Image 1: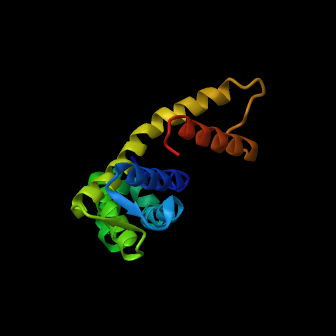
Image 2: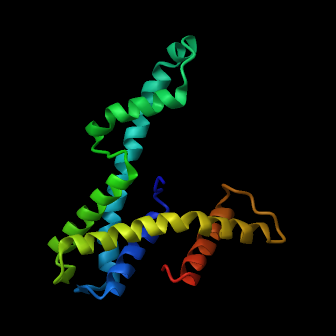
Length: 183
């Protein structure tokens, strides 16, 4: 699943909490500093993919007439171009490989910034980070469905995309994360 910028603070918090709960890591500057460092790396990764997709959209839009003329499948063409340009943007398309790479970068950053100490293999710590990311992503659909159901149960109809809706959605999302012990 693709990670959005709005999910990143929650994923970063989950990483920090899971590292702390593991009992394998000593945090030298607390959960917030650890989450902040993880967040920076996650944001960078998402922004790279967004830049890649923007470039692909430009290419597809510039060639729209030819795409229509040849009756090409625009989605398939989009993916093929994205696959070709991914190395130039330093984007790994396989989510499993990408999350593993991000977990390694987060671990390196936490160690280099002296935010964590550990006496076990580096791979065990990287796996905690990886598992935190993938578990959060797996839980996201379930959480989003719960939030949507709560919003639908309001007497007053909320309109998606409005500021009021977004504020309520974010509040309920955080509440749901807290209720599930994920924040």
